[in-house]
Length: 333
Image 1: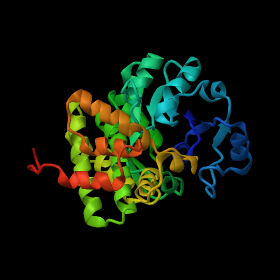
Image 2 (image 1 turned 90 degrees about the vertical axis):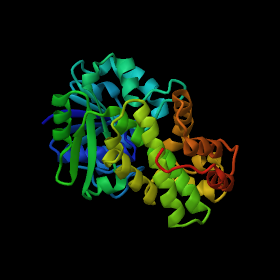
Image 3 (image 1 turned 180 degrees about the vertical axis):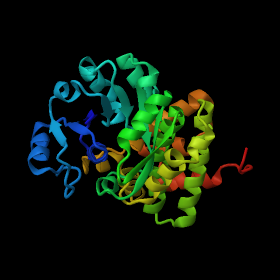
């Protein structure tokens, strides 16, 4: 059995541990809190993030990062994007030199505007051929329940992407391979921002015409920025683009859509954040994606307006009005 480390025990990290265990790997799940590790190991359940889901016997939790990482052949990172660099600096001395390093995170770092694969490269010095990404329509609770799902695993090295694909392929999880890390990462990050906008529309009481319009224009906005940085536009038409966008914008299980709904109902960002232990990455990355778009000279009205609402500088009703009142133009420009 291949020994793998999953660094992060939230809902997605725990769910992906199930995928890896089902695929025949020996999984060590790192958790920040020692008491959560004890619960996982004793009850075979992450009661904080995925209550009611029984974890395989080949998933074991530890609070000790060195223990999790030592001799791991592959390492999967799944912590909040904005704390990842600091976490990685604490872990880097324990990461084996030949391990495949895989990001399950969907965000762009504030300030540096780096994608998570770029943070990995900068902090570990790993060759880009050893760095991978997993992205797709993967709502954690459904994955943990072993409902059939597909995703994209990306790596610039053909041999490593095949290796990554094989270690994630289980009876209920089908991975497709890609070498387009940029498209997968920006698609995964941007869809959270679009989901916030869709949630706001739902919270305001608008229906399917409105949400379909936001989703479609959001996809166009995502493609504009991604292509600017060299992504393949077809990636955005696939699982890591449209697939992830549809799932995140449509499901009540989506943290970002739910966060947006609460904004639409009149709650503030601070009130919503205080009411849950779950992280809505879009609420953080809307600022960095907006800055990245401005730096690249790419028009990004949805990211811009979502950032204004999240920061409390605009109301959700004002955002929707601003969208409609923008100058008209050709759909394909």
